[in-house]
Image (cartoon, rainbow, N blue to C red; front, side, top):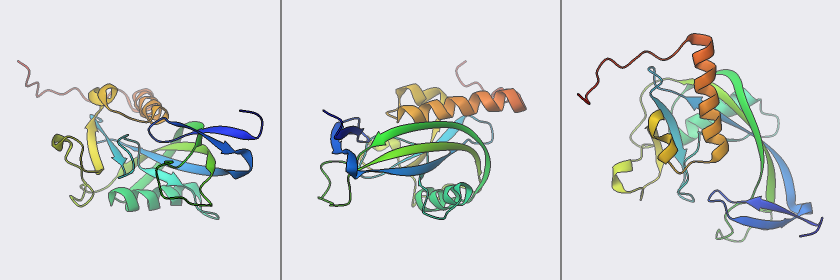
Length: 185
């Protein structure tokens, strides 16, 4: 591949050569939301992917990052959030799934990904919830235990952002409260 193409990656990690002229910049924001005890993190995925990620997405022209996070959480998981500090960033060349219907404007994106700590309010609406017990045939949102993340198919930079958020919270607020209800005895 010469200087005329850029290798972009789909959600499931497939490489796609995209003409350089069709790669556009795309700022994106994502929120890391934990349960109150910090034992679970909120993840989502859509019908195009089997890979989990943090709720979020592209920032619309003229939209501020905090407003984009609030909008994305409402769209993807139906929850209002309070946006906290930025905790991580990453960048990637991304391409829509090549199996998707042809879209002349599709091309690829250079995604600058900004990750923020957020506090989600309320309970996850079952309309958005995914039952992980059903073998993953559905899609939606789920609270996933932090100690299970290494076994979850998840975007690598999103996994890294969750780990950074855990370390940041431990450093600024102290370790999460110990679970005194140990059922493994």
